[in-house]
Image (cartoon, rainbow, N blue to C red; front, side, top):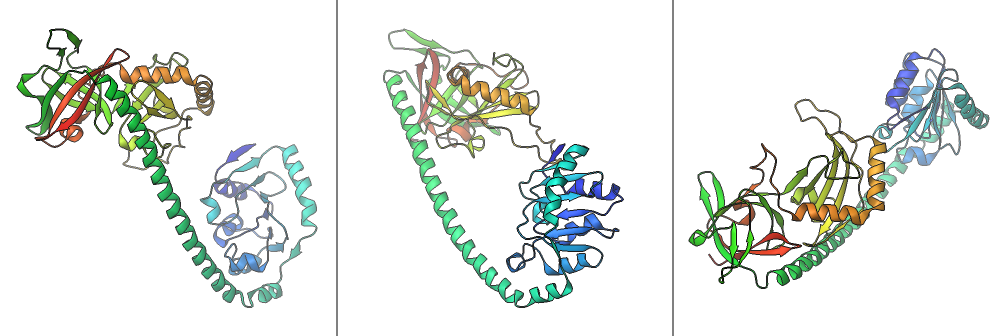
Length: 429
């Protein structure tokens, strides 16, 4: 037995191979799909619904039924919901997909039964249904055509009103979602701001200005203040930073990244970190990526300001959105990777999902050990680090993160669980 999200190509393959007339059960039928299976053949038996509602709503088309009746037997089978294609000899497919154009694009699941006991079991269930079927005649078609166009018009008006109601429903849903998202982010920002206020209460402050250098920009300290040494007026050194390393850096908006500190300037702000295999002890072969970039937060739960993703080589294992609040983090439910997109010529190779078994194991472990995983992520994003060779200049330029050239800011340093964290807020220019 094999499963398919789109069974149509398998139908065509098996129909072409088979020398026996096909038996087709589908509540709804459109000509192009059905004819593609019986092309060049005769004597197929097709079972479908034949009632006013089906044709008035466009589920099936009477002209398609007439076309199929030229070389095949088409039957009315009331109450039909199953979808089955078989030649009774070599194959049976059963599933959710109708023989319609829409059936090729919906979320469908069908199975191909290729062993004789399974085929026999399926037909033992289906064959008694066929005893109640009635062959469709030209007279039945003529009777059905009466007034069907008027009913189609009524249905179109009904669809129009449904579409208007659906639009109103979706608009309200989106407005409510935007409000809830705003409130969740505001709550998260308030929590971070409250914690920052406490740790910044007696912090050392330095001033700086965004300056353009050639085609780039940096945040340059005023009065040649050194960002690597944070010393109080009494001479006590509060912190020493390593030149070129990355440090967690918050804006007043509570947007954050990892700033590259070099003497009197900050040149680049990374919006993500990649940790090579070995950092996640439970699955040492997986690499871990974290991101605070706005585009990576799209589609995640309200309050998400950090996204963690796990990778097995170049294969995506899962994504874990989270709400990072400076000294703590709350992770939401892990998400499976999306199915790989078809490869398109001239575009990058699509990302492949990791094996389902591995994804299931990792998601289960995270669910059962959520606190351990949260501690790993919190430690990973708050500790200073440096990007690996070849990636040391990763990140946004200062003007993109801190403001346009000429913008003045104050830089303060705080200790969060003994890790230096920078906070940058605007000053009047």
